[in-house]
Length: 144
Image 1 (tube, helix red, strand yellow):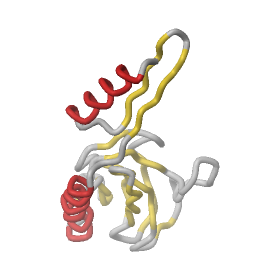
Image 2 (spheres, one colour):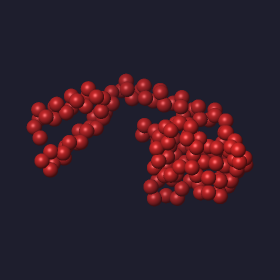
Image 3 (cartoon, rainbow, N blue to C red):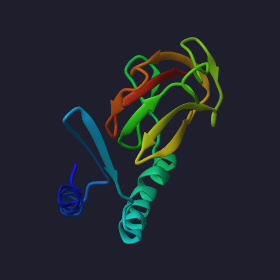
């Protein structure tokens, strides 16, 4: 790939605020990456902090079957275990204590631990490992 082409793609990345771009040409792959400017990184941290802290202020919602619904406080990717080959934090039927880590939600490359807001028995896991969850998506049901 010619230097002029690389410069053209770099300008495009800057214009579209992309952090990565992969181009395949003539069976060759070129990957361009750039870091975000400090001002953008700081604004991302400031914007994400209130969402995570508000999760501790949310009260658990009781469902019609007498269980407490644990919902996602943020948008991100649900992980049931701390690592790819590790055992999940919890399984159906487990006794959970208030404050116990139930899962991790990755949002903007930050790993956010989601904890039980009440003690009880885990009745249901509503999402699958690696699933993208929205704000308010039910993750678990805990019977008191």
